[in-house]
Length: 536
Ligand code: GLN
Image (cartoon, rainbow, N blue to C red; front, side, top):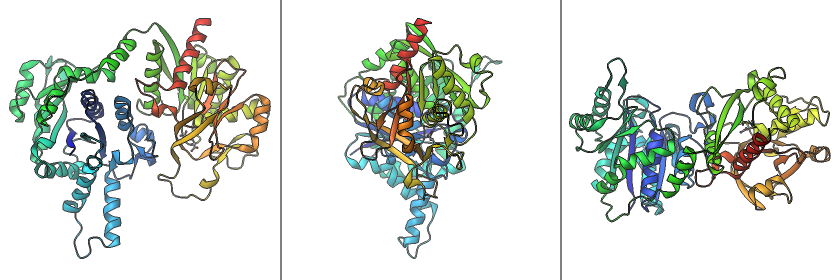
């Protein structure tokens, strides 16, 4: 039987609930337990695939093709293990299931209600992964903050499970904020007290309270919170602001979080967590031997979370190279031939980001050209690959009108075009080419050298692809196809062998990078940037 840990949040959003959940999972895994994490999101979209990054940050894609919350990216990066469709549930998914069943007649004669029908479906999904026999512990993070109207059914489901599961099989953690009032020079516990009150009014009793804080709470404040919030003394701990998210497991271990959890869950005789690999990784982040400046060219750069996995991949690749990677976000909408030198001239590498739609596209093309003509290491991802192809077609092949049919359906040179099976698709949600596909790497190519093997698998999220009709023209002019899907022939990677480092990929390599297994293209891209910096 698996045991269940629930993580709710209060006071404010963006307190790092996902990081706390992932850190706890990491600590339990480091004690030898089999752990997975799932996220329950209160919004009505069936998945975040239809949300734009301004609304919800990056959309993270799993191997099995689920479009999920970006917290699943943290789960995978912390655990070094894959998640799946079952690890991200939304209110939309719950209602979709219940209403479909209602139409099928599954509840014939009954009134279908939030309690028990919606809450039963929530509980079924909360327990689902625990029934596979693959995990000892399931950590469930509930999105939003307690008191929100839309998260009430999730909190109610936890309340019911508190009575339905044996006491030592369920643990509830509540994350709150203890703000520091600069003028008063004081940390304030009242918002935490109110948040716990709200949770308790809903019938859920927290076993552990984790307080996000920018200053050390000290034993007295922790004792005060425990007293007012009705939890065991010692069961209030802090999560203090950290310079790296990967430091949080170490900090929470020092606070005794995992110790409390295993004790409450009756798991005896477990070893202390082995955090050697994580500590080594942190050491490398703390003491880089060099630095590179990388331009991240995209249209969502104002938003920290929009390119989360790419940013994290740079942290991993930097650590692998003992190099500090300073990422400069360049807004593609405002990039043009006149300011390219000013914005990109000092960069050691240029990455053109994925995306959808026309806004900022010409700026991405400018970035590709600048990298190609000036021998700056270049890395294009998905839409970034499309723009690398369009730029090459326009400038080297002389196809001035070349474009992707995503934004110019009538172009006379559709070098990027809709995939055949997408032409009849009208429904938007979950209909892209999603998830893991294999790719065969050409002998002697940069890609083959980077991966060191012939067959790889990476994750996808796109509708448009390299138009095979132009393959010969590109290859003859010096842009090589170095990776293809072995089953369909779809082009996955292009590169320019005459350039010091120019690679663009149809897939999203950033989804699979972890501290312990940094993604190889990112690692080599940083290496190329370091070489350029060294030679400059
Ligand atoms: N908009 C492009 C497509 O749908 C690229 C998608 C992406 O960059 N993830 O094919």
